[in-house]
Image (cartoon, rainbow, N blue to C red; front, side, top):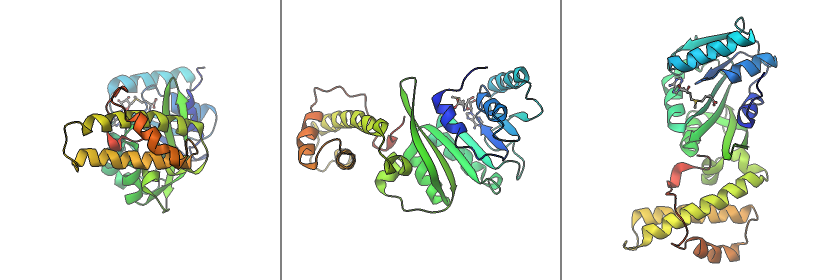
Length: 261
Ligand SMILES: C[S@@+](CC[C@H](N)C(=O)[O-])C[C@H]1O[C@@H](n2cnc3c(N)ncnc32)[C@H](O)[C@@H]1O
């Protein structure tokens, strides 16, 4: 029996116990197998859009002897789900834009779904904005380090809450409690964004929209670092200037790319 990665374990812990679950984009099927093996849910539906992963998931389910409780289905997004079949939908290990598209296309399948457990690899802020616009709010969330990457994992239910711009950018629940992973991630983001800002500034007119957007994003990042106690507000300008130095390496940055990419 293979043990789950820390990322998938964080997903498992956020699935509603006692209700059937759908794992969309299941690939290896490990999540569905773990949920059933641990008896957290009565049944699981493992969906993938590609035949290779469906075959892999079928093999995993067969090897684990869990065929009676896990249905592996080929199809796009929520398409293979019947109405009211599951209480939790999991979408993890995909880009945020793909998750948005799947949820939008499958709105008619979400009626009886009480919880979404989501872990996007990219575009987490855009995903958060879409979910809030559709009437969902996060009820739990965390950052997880897994093989050198930091991932966000969050559970969403229907409801509303106050969302600040910083909440959209880094995650409401993640920001609500001290997390060394968040501080470390923001420090790295500060270096990348500072270098991108410095590079964009050279040869541009004052007021250039891209430079302005990067400056705005940097200001928000500095305020967040101060809020987390990473540096004082008086030192942030100096530190910002140091981090903006063009001699620092730049991996390129998209302002709205979010924390966990
Ligand atoms: C990187 S794997 C992630 C596997 C697993 N969820 C995890 O987090 O470890 C992404 C999987 O999503 C599947 N996928 C991508 N788009 C999909 C869609 N629209 N509907 C269903 N599955 C999809 C891919 O075929 C692939 O197997």
